[in-house]
Length: 119
Length: 108
Image (tube, rainbow over all chains, first blue to last red; front, side, top):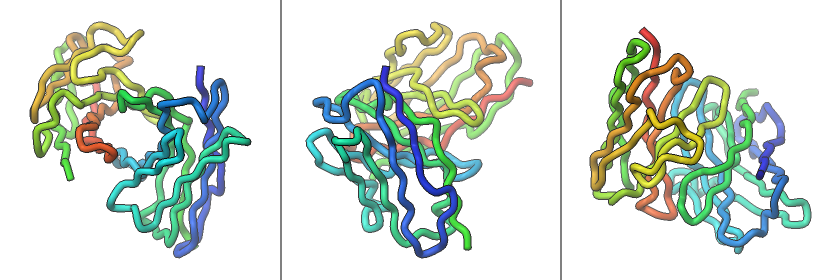
């Protein structure tokens, strides 16, 4: 049974870079045909897919965030990471990491971590 | 980009009622649609995949139907533990994944 756990600062200053890590346990992040993704949810609002990385290393980003997002994998630590640059208050949200396979439905989720953008 | 429009945005129903939520895509997405349940403070949980397939372990009172642009999610007999927000999610326009705006279900 896969388990995912987000970690990172809960407070980021405006214009800085938000950095989060998702640690995967119960399975290998290098497993074929798995996608590892980030989704966020502003307080009281809906879900927004940020982007994903395929086990091969290919990355896919939401066009609305593409210019500010980088997702990477560290196979040695069984982790994948999110960097979102030039943040504003609008980036305040609960950030979830999640996994999906070729069926493109999110099967496993982390518990989520709240990131607040404020000075 | 494909837009997913859910309605209603919220609803209130009595225990035992039949509850229906719709999700409309801005273009044909075949059956490439999933439904999730999110309870307060929790991550979403997959209920229905490929428009009408019930995820393993999900109660049979939940069902989904539709194809093309119009989809329906139904709870046949609302239970107190079904209080949550429900989201649709399309995966036709790969690699972009898009969620609907959500429907909050409350008990009357």
